[in-house]
Length: 439
Ligand code: UDX
Image (tube, rainbow, N blue to C red; front, side, top):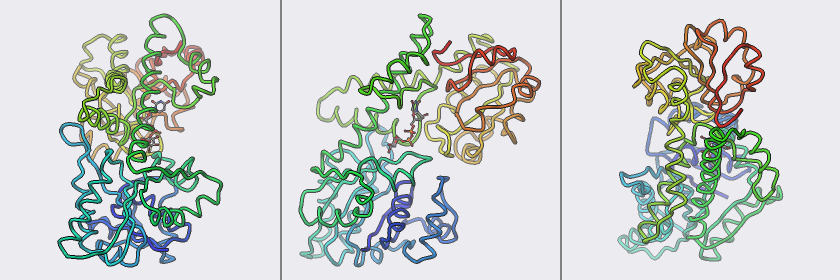
């Protein structure tokens, strides 16, 4: 079986590589020649555990190809996945120009029946728009070729994307014709064999599923952040409350960790986009508007604690920051709480010495520039700093030598944005510990 994956971003590259790894012939297409050249030289555009190995292995075997020629890539392909970006427009709705441009090009260049499946997170009704774009292109060339449209949203977590793809909880496929269902069934057969569930549904429901999943997860986080803030005021411990409620299987243990707010490429964008979609249909998604508001505020919680401890004016002070990426195991800085915290500390007159195991290059090139001093390791960041802020819970920050940290810092104060340290232990070492809603 042969497929094409258009867009070698995060979703496209992981999907293409993983499909090739189960024996499917895959051509990954991108308009960016440089990106394609680097991929052919084994250079990954993103950091994702396990991805480079899988790409190299399948590239060498010839099952995975890279090209800038979409027309050639879809020759003989049963499925073309659209996995290009859907950046938020100024009003928060997902911009479909790249998706529809690909649909149009497929319509202009296809030579046989093909299933065109969207993998990018696209607003409900995009399936219809994709269908129209392909049909228009076919009509222009006076072609009577047939095609199917499908929605196959991706539920990959950054840092665990390869594993999520190869061992999915579920695969959601939106389709509206039998031919497409049969083709998608064949494509996902290797994954079904591992006993996983494939859920078929209509296209709008599949499109909606993706948004609803991310919106529900974002809701859990904002809910818990709200509760943690209240815990602090009433003298309760959010860690205990989390354990207490998480043991109810209807609530679940996962995704109820309070912290400095969610970031990344999905939650902030998708929550905004679904609120916008609802608005277009005259519906007010009140819960999600609050989810967003709580999250925006939560990104300020750590800097507020710094100010509560040291005073509003932080001029001349320096803070060590551990972690910059929006979560561990990724270099992704999109919507990272670290950026908000850094801006706030700087606005109050402070300097920041930052260390992140992977994200510093990305931060310096595109997000933080020279706003912080980039340090060679976690301890180096603490050198003569007034206090330490833990922002991203990378494993290597979990058990530092507090003796060393205590000697490097001017004051033994730790602002723990992810509640990874035990207060009692830190206090026994002479530190003052601030967490998020914990005692
Ligand atoms: C998410 C979804 O999990 C994935 O299914 C979807 O396809 C894309 O969006 P991702 O953005 O990679 O994946 O990150 P995820 O691990 O889900 O974390 C999202 C954010 O929530 C991070 O900023 C994380 O720090 C935060 N988070 C997560 C919390 O603050 N508390 C939690 O309990 C869990």
